[in-house]
Image (tube, rainbow, N blue to C red; front, side, top):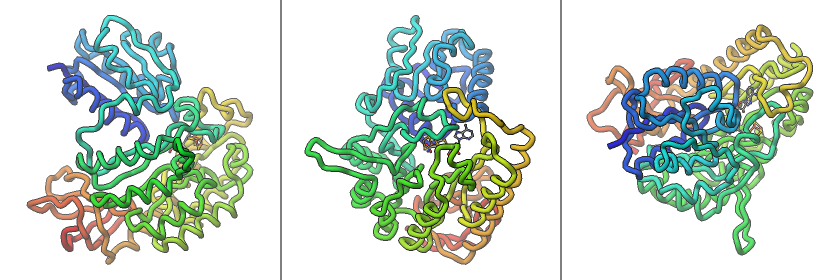
Length: 434
Ligand code: SAH
Ligand code: F3S
């Protein structure tokens, strides 16, 4: 039997794409291996969001071409395929295929014609969802895209170029995928989209559906225990969706709603919503809907023309909103974006200092929140065993890691009493199952 090797880089949408690709290849009777040297088909499922992410892909390709079997087919799928286009073949002549994030369902063509080169970086929209075989097994957490692409065009971001314009999937397809996910093993459903709360679908009878409708319907599926969604655009956080946090107990009290910067001047240059009061008002409404809600953000430091003063405003908002579980990045100029050619690019050195200071604040927030959880009871979802084999790692409703002593049988969902915490994780005692 032929074997395939797949390595996934980047966001949860890529993790999802990787699962669909593996499932598709298995339906062609290939089996997965984690040893690249014995694989007959090797694919890298790639991320292009920052220059470092793209560099990682090319250095992995450089390593792989030295150890792979002579006859193995080698290729890339995902955002680097869109970013590099046919230039990828020039950089790595051994490549057999280059497929964009919306054309990876064409991968079996290379199995049928291994002597040709397969190149397709078209924006095929939602076509792939109809052509892929249904998933036959699903991990505890099922990622289910509700939309693909983004219309927001933040000036730093390559995603609208690599993933195309926004397209919302048919409501019924999402419900069908959710039912299939729980039938094949899922307990938690995480709805995905580059602009997930922009979900907007009109069916053939003219009926309109928003993300709140999807959540309501999927919450009715008995076997679904937890629901979340990512990533949200602040100004698309409409009242119907905010209300879900009050009415749907299965919806976790945790929301990723990136602000990126705390400076209205920089937000304007980023083409992001720049009214901080309006943003804080949304945070307030969320807290009113669900008092225990916590919010996470992504941040970019060192955007072109960012002054010390602008950066201080980013620190201020991080402190004020008390974001937990957040990500911070140095601005990275990307091809096909407006910010890459803006004047007053910031030096690496200044970016590094700012990143360090922001990370210090974000870690402080996380530690404070983790410590505030000690003594509380939380319902947690099993993730994995730890490296020592003595403990089990669970995820809290806030996506914190919670470590408990290993038990003879592993319960997928557990009530845990938090006994200890530090900046990176919680420790807990099992109370009872479910
Ligand atoms: N809404 C999208 C965001 C995609 S990019 C989604 O979740 O699918 C993820 C994060 O990477 C962004 O929120 C931003 O903080 C960061 N990012 C995007 N482009 C960047 C760039 N050019 N340099 C540094 N960070 C960037
Ligand atoms: Fe990128 Fe902004 Fe959309 S970060 S994915 S353009 S909301």
